[in-house]
Image (tube, rainbow, N blue to C red; front, side, top):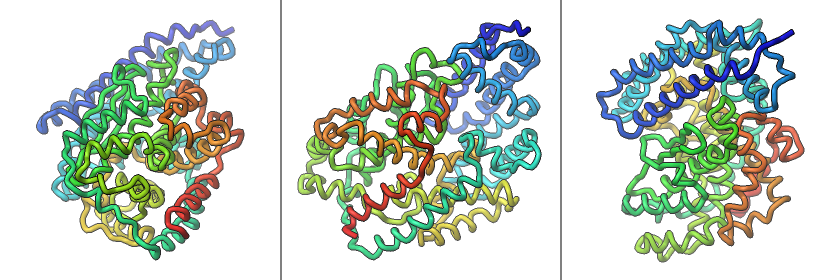
Length: 497
């Protein structure tokens, strides 16, 4: 007879979450305010905290308590937490604690080196760190390997369960077959004028506007903050402290606007997690792809639509009259949806975005499954951009150095972006049957849409699996055809094809 109590786990779980919060705070500071020379010394602190957090959860006492607990006696919330704890334990117990500390230190140092390499357009500075990061990730995956499992499948599972290489190959294969021909047709159509986006836009006014925009979306500034960073991101310590960043360019109006909408989508998800779940192992988004579905839904399905801008555009023109007074709303929205193959993923249009992710997915497979030397990666990156987007990056800052993810050890994360787009399209298809979405946007009632998402997705955090959330809302299993249909219908209309 099992005699363990879930309450026996709480001191360990609480300490685990507290140490994770401390590390997140330091990571936030490193990316927003910390001085350049702090990184080497901060890395040691993060390494120690990483090891302490690891040992809090992965130890004989926790394992012994888990073995005595009868899962059938647990509440639904406790079952969800226990399930996630078991998976985390199984994944991590084979990793030596000192190696986890070393990896934590490496990620902290690598992140700063990546920033320097990007600024100086010098991949050689970063290459030794990337080589070590890849080696650690492969080592950790090898520890967790069972039977004939592929190492990259193990890494993908950290971010999106049940979406391994076989399903992703099918998914990206469908996208490749449909999107590349559509992109070619668009390249032969009349080019859309978006030159007015690239005038002189005062950064202080941009900051005021983006603060207003986040608030309009429903971001609660009593429970959240906006700051600046090189690479926009969202972090959450609990649902009452959610932080987003953006990056402002004087000669690019829409970069910060679309980043704010995107990160705002992430933030609304985190702020919408139920209070009973926050600060637990399931007090976060259900998965990376489900999280991306929310940010991409707000950014693209809503934020690039004419209806979204009906109540907002007059205020934007009022903020920047010199630049936008002679630009009608229809022209503004058309320019927001301009398709043009470019080098930077975060600046990519909605159609070509999935091709950027395809490049990164194939690069990660080369790194993990084919042992491709790090020194060859920049050139391979350029070759893939030429193949899929028809362009070649002029330098590594435009190319392989543009993303922060690998410097943080997040190898396997990128496919979640594309899956998130597909989730979003499937969710949007159902939402339009349940709500008059376009009319709500025209009336400025975006809160009704957010409440719908909160009811069906946000409140559950990670207590439900993403496939279950998707099926409960849409009545179907994951179906990428909605995404392809959405893209084709939208851009054939934009370009009058």
